[in-house]
Structure formats: structure tokens, C-alpha cells
Length: 326
Image 1 (cartoon, rainbow, N blue to C red):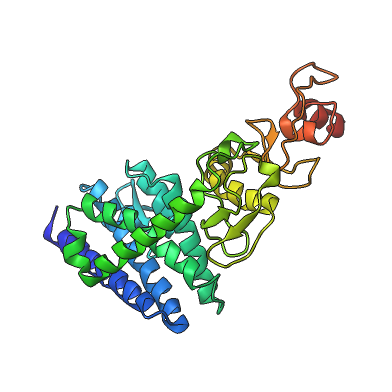
Image 2 (tube, rainbow, N blue to C red):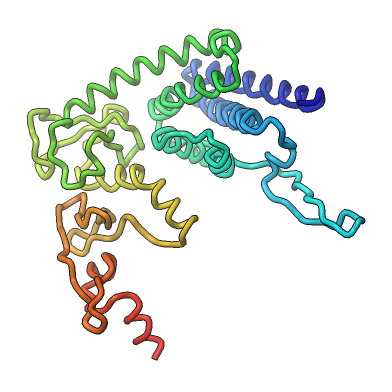
């Protein structure tokens, strides 16, 4: 790699380190105004660090092309074409997609945490402090493993570069993980209607925290769960918690379906309880356990799609389209 690229990478890496350190320092102040700065700086630092990882994943590529948010084909003056990258660089959504394409994907949990961080940052930019201090602490601590992993991919020692911020993040992560284990253990024996919820952390609909605990840990019946959020102190209804959790658990699959195939799902509105919790590949509502029987089209005898059976349709999508067209 040429000297110019190395200098570019070094500058980006150093800026990412400084932003992360500033973000953690701001957050440690435990002051609402500093929290706003913490999220901005931490978000910016992670975005820069992720871009550095992307560049490392394709060392022979032009960084300007690799990080451009869009491209424009232009004539090269020789009867051919050249690609002109935009001045704007990729955002977090584009970064995660390219990292996946270049063999450096993030986990489902990490993607969810990054989405929450992005949302918090966007709300802050519009003058709103999202959730509470504890939820933001959870966000930073939950992204500690990803931060460390990205440093290691780059062949850098995070403890050396982050200095005191490393110790702060590590302690936050340890405390959060202990709290999370306690909460998850309280409902680990619950027989959930949806297999998609097994082994997942439940999410508070009020503050977005995963520190939801079941008050009676001996209970195994989903319909009898009584829950409390250890972050904001609310006692949400189990059905509302299921809605919030399912959206996060299956959100990435919904994104992939829509972007890759243009299809809806996998979550639909349940015709029995009215919640957005019917999982198509399970043929079951995660909130109330309602199921719909398989049904053949009255015209062509093929299986009727899940979302149409939920509506009570007697026709498959293709036959209904033909009927409406005619």
C-alpha cells in the first residue's frame, strides 16, 4: 500500500481513537449535557474505526472508492469510462453492508446495538435526549466487544490506544453483563410461544433496555409473566415486551428480505390479538400463540401465503392479483 494511503489510514485511525476516548470520558462525567457529547463522539469514533476495518479488508482497493457513498460513471476521454466517487462517505448502514460483503460481518446483536446507537445520535441531533442515562450506558458497554474486535482486526492493542477509556469501558461491560445474566436467568425456563425468543434478551418498550427481569423466576408460562425493567423501573405488559423484542430479533431478517428480494415479513399483524408478532416461518404469534392452518387456494389449489391466510383470504396472491386485475 502506498505512503499516501498509509497516512490516510493513520489519520482516520487516530481520529477514531480520540473520538472514542472523548465519548467515554464525557459519559463518565455522569452529566446529561456531557451524555449528548458522549454519544456524538462515541458514534463518530466507531464509524471511523469501522471504516478503517473496511479499508484493511481490501488493502489493494482505492480507499476513496471503498468509502464513497455513491458513484458516477464518467467518460475517460479515451472512449472508455471511469468511476467518480462522491465526496460523501458511507454511513453506518452502508458500512455494515460493505463489511458483510468484504468478509467482516458484525453479529446480529452488535448490529442491533449499532442501530440503537445511531437512533440515539439522531435523536440528540434533533434536540431530544433519548431514553435515560442507564440505557446509554448499556449501549456503550454492549458495544465494547465489537470495539475491541475491530482494534484486533487492525492489529492494534485497544488497551494501549484507549488508555483510561479502556478500563472504564471494561468495567461498564462487566457490570452490564452481570446484570443482564441475572435478568435473563429469571425467564430462561419460560416456554415461549415463538422459538425465535428462546435464548434472547427481552427488551423494554419504554427505554429500550435489555435489563428486563421476570418478578417470579419460577414461572414457566409466558401468559403469566410479570416483568420489570431494571433500567427505567417500569413494569411493562409482556405482550408489549414481546413486540419490542421480536422487532429487534427478526429486524435484520426483515431488512435482508426487503433489500435483497423486495418481500415483506417475517413479522405480520396477528388477526387474533392485533399485535405485530405473527412470525411467518413459525406459523405462530409470538405474543398470544395463535396459529393459522394451512389452506389451499380455491382456484388453483396452491398454498395460500401466510399474510393472506391471516386476512382470511380464500385465494393465493397470484389468483387474487388476477381477479383484481380483471
